[in-house]
Length: 358
Image 1 (tube, rainbow, N blue to C red):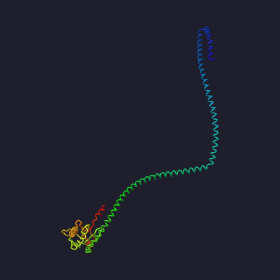
Image 2: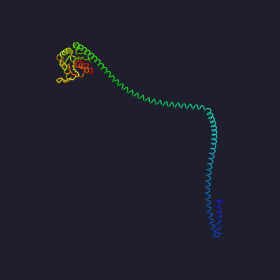
Image 3: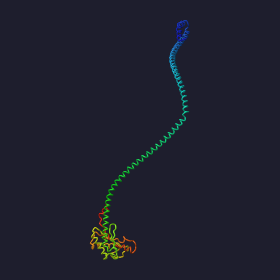
Image 4: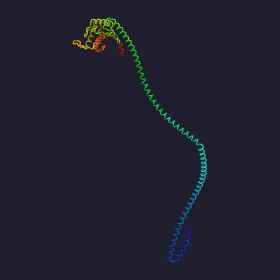
């Protein structure tokens, strides 16, 4: 029985209940009333429960409708997936068949082309080896090229430095060439002057020899050396031993020479006195061989400038002592040779000396 039917039953029994109340005692009526109120409350509770259940039923029906729709969607999706699965299975079957065919073909190719593949592999390895060799060769060439470039740069720098040096040397050479030309010209002039001097000396020697012909071989000798004419007179022709006064024979020879010299004012005269190495033992005016050599040379110069009439500015006297011997031997003959007076005739060659200085 539903709660609504129960409620209707209670309402129908209400008049009866009221009638019954009038017929029954109060105590029983109260008990009945309490039951009635209990039934009434129970009806109300049942109605509330019924409403709650009706609401829950509505929600359940809505949820069922939603679930039904979702299930239908899922079913549709499941059908679609089943169709896709069937297509995938069919595609997979075709792929397996294709794979089987390809695998068979691959096995056939591998079996048929194994030798060719080996040849190709060997060819590839050979090419790789050749390529590696060429790369190594290329690296070596690059290294050599870099080294060569460095060497070329160094060589270019060295050539530039050498060119600078060469240019400097050429400039120096040009200056030297000019100097050499000047010096060659000076040398040529000097040679002409020396030749002229030698010619003058030769002529002078000949004139002196002619003038002193009677004295040659008798303690007098005339010779030419280095452009000069030497008249060498032994001691016995001019002086007594240890003396510096000119003897008559020697005076005659000196004056004969003076006559020649007066005719040649361009000739300068040097008179050198020489002694031997025997020390002088005198205590008078002559102390040693230096004094003797100087005083003998001075005596000859005085004779030439007074009796010979030579310009004193042309004549020089010097004593050499025993320090320029003709013969260094310690014999009487050697000492006799060394005791001498040399008259040196010198042509004036100022121009030649100027050339030499330049």
